[in-house]
Amino acid sequence: MTERKIIHVDMDQFFAAVEQRDHPELRGRPIAVGYDGERGVVSTASYEARRFGVHSAQSVKVAKRLCPQLTIVEGDYRKYKAVSREIHSVFHEYTDLVEPLSIDEAFLDVTVNKRGMELAVDIAREIKAEIFRRTQLTASAGVSYCKFLAKVASDWRKPDGLCTIHPDRALDFIAQLPIERFWGVGEKTAAKMHWMGIFNGSQLRQVSLEHLTQVFGKAGSVFYDFARGVDERPVVTDYERKSVGTERTFEQDIWKRAAVVAELYHTVMELLSRIEKSDFSGKTLTLKVKFYDFTQITRSMTANRDLRKKDDILPLAKQLLSEVDYGHDRPIRLMGLSVSNPTTADDTNRWEELWLEFDELTD
Image (cartoon, rainbow, N blue to C red):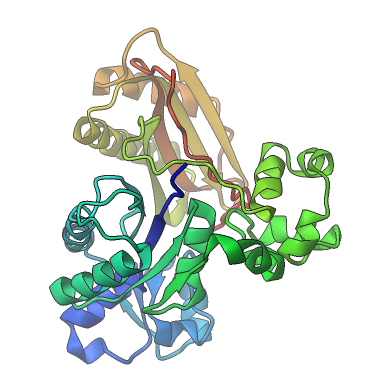
């Protein structure tokens, strides 16, 4: 059986790099892409800002406290998507087996490639060079025989890195790998691992499959395999969309009924726009509400028809909202709506990516 050749390409500080490229006055300065407001959240931080502890998903307020000289740049997502398309065009010059993970990273299966190249590391090197030639942006790449190790490798020598994990050295590499570097292990999972005495891959390898699944559920079997260098997931080029959603974080907490209903209406209209853009059909509507103290609830309802029109979604959204207990002493910070339960779903012989990070992200 031919050994797989997998590359993971991850753009370095993508949004921030694009802004520094297009605005020379920002080069070498700590910047963060995000909304500069009371409820603003950092989308991407430049490496200059990261030295101060600024990172993505952090509130802008905290980021400014950590780095007083931080410059906040409002994101231009249309521009980022255009650059991303240019980068993906490079990928497809080598293989059609491209699995986008996000706007700035992807897996490539180059076991059989369009250039007939023998070594995946040579392909990765060429891709990095071509991306830089076309966009003046750097990328880091990881090369290995499976997705888990290719992704770990791409993070190993950032920025502008290139790392290969050969099958013969994989188990030794994993043995020394800090548990925090395992794909799917976040802060809370790592803390639980540490409590169990697991700090690296070697120690993870000593834990039985039964115990891992007892503690971590289905993810336990994945951790068990990862510790042994086993990851059979293919590079998947086309996922079936399971849901479409949108959410809004408010500048100020809201609690008056008129304001809440108005925001619900705006959320419905944004959801309709996304449904139309993605050509999605589903029968289940879910309302998500996050309160002032970051506690949150969801309410769902399944209809007997496709939810694609305002006249179908808005009444259901109002009905779900009527089940939410909010008020002056419990104002709302965030509201979201999503449609799921696709009407044409056929899961036979489909692969579905499992995201293993179970730690809750707070804004």
